[in-house]
Image 1 (tube, rainbow, N blue to C red):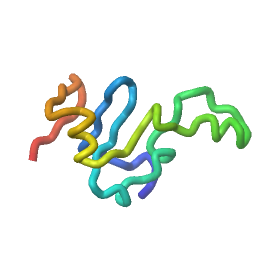
Image 2: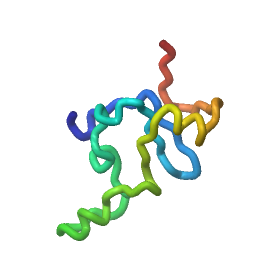
Image 3: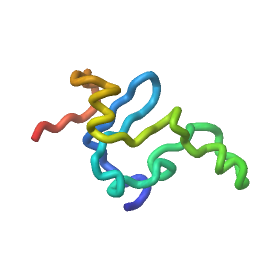
Image 4: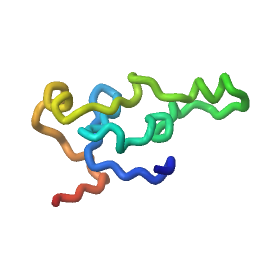
Length: 85
């Protein structure tokens, strides 16, 4: 997988944390390839490490964990593409 070319089907936001829901965690890129903290880009290794997301930004969870955490209902955010299979 290449950073910047991941399309998500099961992406949820709760209390400012992005939850990626999958039962095949190995199919997901590392979260550092998905998201950065959105802070000013400065040169240097310390600055690079400071941009890495934490569990307070993004988490990859299983379907079972999602049901416990999120329940069974969700709201679609206007402007987001939704595809029903």
